[in-house]
Length: 169
Image (cartoon, rainbow, N blue to C red; front, top):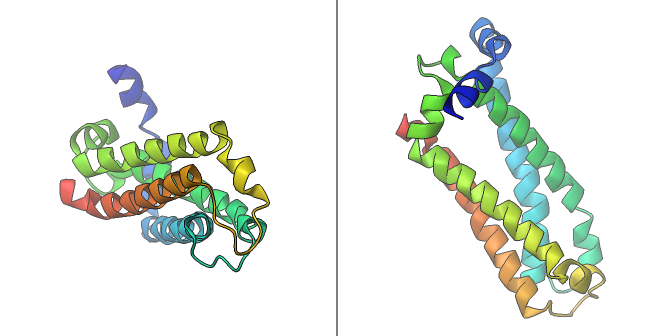
């Protein structure tokens, strides 16, 4: 498995692109942050409504922001892959070494995984259907609130640990 990851995590084209263009890393960081904004803006607003903030809005209205959150997550995945696979353009470390030694990156990846499992729980438990047409002024079920609270905690943790990644290098 290690040899597979050592091979797969090195993308010479990305390394060359990052090394050849001084603007590439900053460009990717900008779009990574933009992705985070869209992700937290869309998902966070939905989670906050489920938790009871802005109860004057029907859930369906806030749910329309979720595709922007998905788009933001996609931006973060794309730029995150550029960071990891093009890492050697900045520091002489193999991406596998970075993933296996940077505790903050490991925590970030763990929180992303847990956020994905939390999302799966939202759908598997039927909470998605339970809140789908929740009218304005109505409280969400308790389990939906727990899942929404966990979602906010996990995504904020992803941001927190992401900011600590340079400290682990």
